[in-house]
Image (cartoon, rainbow, N blue to C red; front, side, top):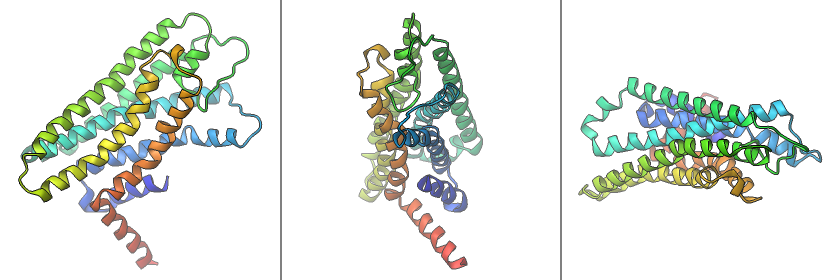
Length: 274
């Protein structure tokens, strides 16, 4: 929470960071805060309590919020890779293509798509009948685990989830990889070693976040829920729901001189004013 709040503050307060790259990074930090807040408090309560329960309404609310944030993050990571592609491969047209209006439109579309995906999939999942003892062998209320726990005919839900997740996970990941293939080709054409190092430094942080997030998510959402092993969802949920959002601020600050400089200036300003 502290790391993401710090990134949001420096991106808004430091005029040098008023660019599309940091606008998208601010949105990612806000998403990560909401993402972890939707599951971690309940998870910590259950881990420290003898009765590890959640109400049906609490589970439904967690289901909606968790998937809204997760679906939106899938797409915003793709938008960030497109921003890097334009900055490196089309530098002379960057300010024209990635103008403030386009950036706001892209982020609005991403949020709307993430909300639509989550509401439709979560609502369809909650329509499935739950028979007998409603016990989820999991840390959070998540669509694949709820489908697996439901009884009755659920093949249609599994198929729908797989098809939707192809567009929410596989397609954005392919676009990200295509963007970085073009970026890599352009970077190797740069004659200056300092220029190549700076370009790789800017992109490497985003690539690390992409692989940390997409890898575990694909392993859960692009296979039928009935084939998921017992402990696999727990480990993967901790990975993309807790570990990755926690590491994001460190990855983006420790590998970015501009953000580190803005953080130092912010802390120095706070202590100077005191």
